Amino acid sequence: MCIDERMFSTLDKIFFSHCEARKQCQASSNGKGHVKRYEHLNFQGFITLKSKDMVIGLPSFNAQEIICTDCLSGKQTRQPMPKQCNWKANKVLELIHFDICGPITPDSSSGKKYFLTFIDDFSRKGWVYLLLNKSEALSCFKEFKIMVKKESGEVVKCLRIDKGGEYMSNEFIDFCKEHGITRQLTTAYTP
Image (cartoon, rainbow, N blue to C red; front, side, top):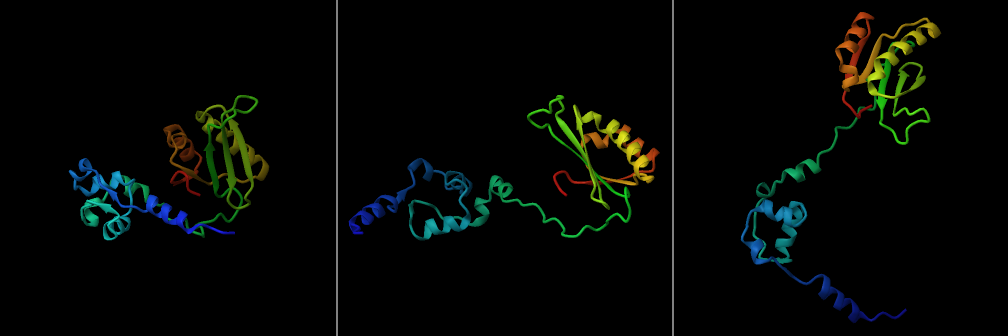
């Protein structure tokens, strides 16, 4: 295959020619303005633009001048989750993981928009309940508690839940205290 090398030199001129910062852009030598103008380019990118004279009229500034709150929040990461759990259950129903998911689309055939999961930490057995509203969580938990006591003869001792409003109501907290159930609160969207 024969390629005309002149084609590449033309493309180089088109794509790699120098850009000139417009006069209205030059009026602001503020680093933050340039960060927004260049789509939140990182500091090393600005050093490259300046050192290779890729943008004529680009002022020099240090990293502190271009700290941008949008860039900082965009680069935030979550702490890694521990590979091993600090505390595991030693018998059935000693620890139940309990969470609500939804609203889901499409709704179930009966119009339910949420589902509630209970997972036993020891046996890894799971139960799923469909709910119309999140407010049904407590009544569903009461029903679940009675059912598992009849099935296993054991009682629920601890719930691992996030800080969702359905678990933080006074009624839910009082029910857990009344039945000797401790609550371990986790952060939402974490295992």
